[in-house]
Image (tube, rainbow, N blue to C red; front, side, top):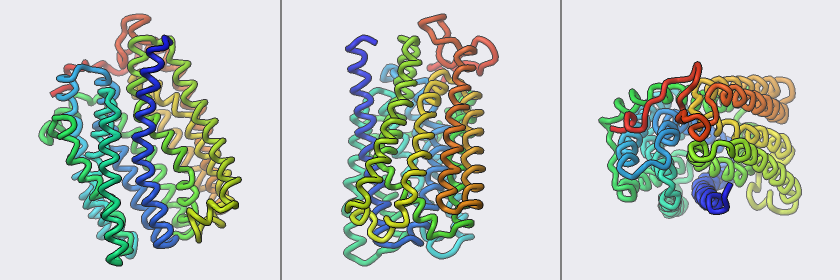
Length: 440
C-alpha cells in the first residue's frame, strides 16, 4: 500500500478510535458511577436496560447505517446528503417504534428494572438518531464531525449527573434518563453539522431500496445483540442480579478494549469498501491485521488488569465490587479476544456485501455464545458462564473466517480484478442496488 494511502487510512482510523473513545468513556463513566453509587442490584437492572439498548442499536444499524456504509462510503457530497436524509430518518423511526415497545415492556415489569426501562423507552429515539449521525460522518470520511458530536454528548451529560448528585435523585431511572437525554441533545446538533434534516417520511423508501441488505443486516445485528440480551436475562435468572452485576463489572473493566473494537468498527467497513474498489489485493492484509492487532491488544489489556487491580486500581474503580470481579478478568479476556478475532472477517464480508454469508456467520456465532454461556453457568456458576462465552466466540470467529473463504470465491476480489462492483455477485449472490437507486 503506498505511503500516502496508508497515512490517510491511519488518519481515518485515528478519528474512529478517538470518537469511540469519547463515546465509550461516556458510557464507561455512567457504568462506573452507577456501580459505585447504587450497588450491584441497581447496576444489574441498569445492565438489563443497557443490553436492550444494544439490541435496539443493532436493529437501527442494520436497517439504516450498515447499508449506508456499504454503498455510500466515499461518494460525492450531494449523493451522500440524499442518502443520509433517508438513513437518519430511518434511525429515528426505528427509535420511536422500539421506544414504544420498551415502554410497553416496562408496564409488565416491576422494581428497579421497570424504572430503568421507562427511562430507556423515553430516550431511545434520540439515542439511535445520535448513533446514525456518527456513522453518516464516517461514511463521508469526516470522522472529526462524529468526534465533535460525541464530545457534545459527553459535555451535556456532566451537568445532568452533577445535578442528580446534588439534588439526591440517585436512582437508576434518573441516571438512565440523563444519559439518554444528553444523547438526544447531541442528535439535535447533527443536522447543523451535516446540513441535512432527517427525512422521517423517507424511511419506508430507504428500507425498500436497501431490501437486499437491510433485512439481512437487521437479522444479523439483532441475532448478535439478541444473544447477548438473552444471555444477560438467562444469567440473571440462573445466577441472580448480584452475580449479574459482577459479570457486568468485569465487562466494564474491558472498556478500553471495547473502545478499540468499536472505534475500528466505525471506520473499518468504509475503509474496506474503499480498499476493495481501489486495491482489492490488500484486503487480506488489512482484515488480517485488523483481527490480529485487536487480539494482541486484548491479551495485553487483560494482563494489565490482572496486575493493576490488586495494586489499587480495583479499589479505586469498583470499591465494593472489584474483589468478587477479579477472578472473572481472565475468562472475560478470553471472551473478548474471541470477539476480536472475528472483526476482520466480519468487515470483509460486509465490504463484499455478502449479506447471506455474514448473516449465516452471525446466527452461528450468536447461537454458540448463548448455548455455551448458559451451559457454563448451569454447570460451573459465574466463571463457567464466561468460559462458555469464550468458547462460543472463538468457535464463531473460526466459522466467520471460513465464510470469508467462500465469499471471496463467489464474489471475486472487486472491481480492480474483474470489474464487478462490491456487493454484486458472479454466482449465487444478492443483486446489486446502485448508489443512485439507494438515494431518495
